[in-house]
Length: 350
Image (tube, rainbow, N blue to C red; front, top):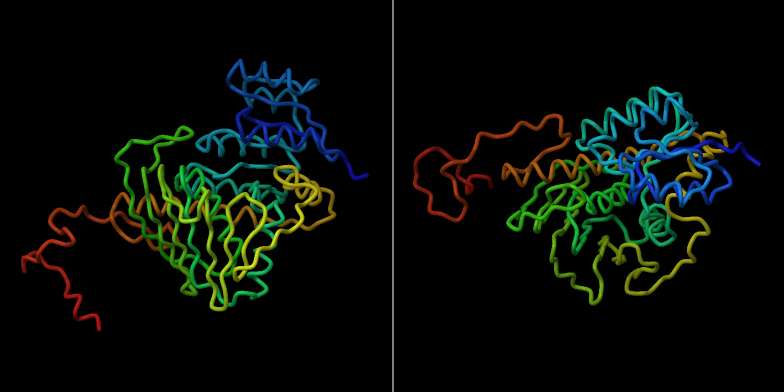
């Protein structure tokens, strides 16, 4: 059997429990420690995972109980601090939940620091550990529906960052060589909705244009009508020779109108991602940060979408080149043109 790697989890919330359960279920790992700021969560962790040592802070845990793998499952704004501390403790592998950071730049710094240590990284994503979406990725990349021209995503009850980043991450895995070039979003925030500690939109439409001309159109919000009965999510992948439709986490999809239902994988979810991490630490598989880099790209798109909505502009990528425009004060689309204060004649564009 391969080496059993000691592991710890920072954060006892939903993401942390996914890692804790996966580590406890896998023979590849010895779950050793966990930490959370909340006393009631620490008490629950001790009861649920007998034998682990529980701490109130990641600093205390890393100093007193260093492990070979650390899973960072805290709020995004703390990911960078915790991940860098874990790297300095000498880990052999690291898992960081998505979004990698609270900003694209923070996520970029995290991946750069991991790359400098030359250790593997996992950024878990349920769609990348299930049979249906993995089979769809293969069939698209095998050109079974021809060149992709449009991806439409309808997502009810969620927002650009908390769910949209998963969908956009999946899109980046579909077409890894096709770089996104611009993002344009219309965002309504009138209901002052918050979710998972973040201010989010009431409704939004986000359009992403790729170098090939591929368009991705993402509909998100509190009450988005999904035009497939009984579904909360729908994906349509439109190629030049056919369409694939699937429904988020559900098993099964339509290819050119025909239903396909692949057999589910024996190991899914966080455990699959963590065991892939173990394969890389054991030298069974080469270092591969493809999923992590795609996740970072999805984070860049999400940040660009919110900037686009805030400033009412199309945001070009890479995001490092974005400069906020001067505020618009006298230009309202749909109103008569006064003939003054500049502007450009759209009839002259050919």
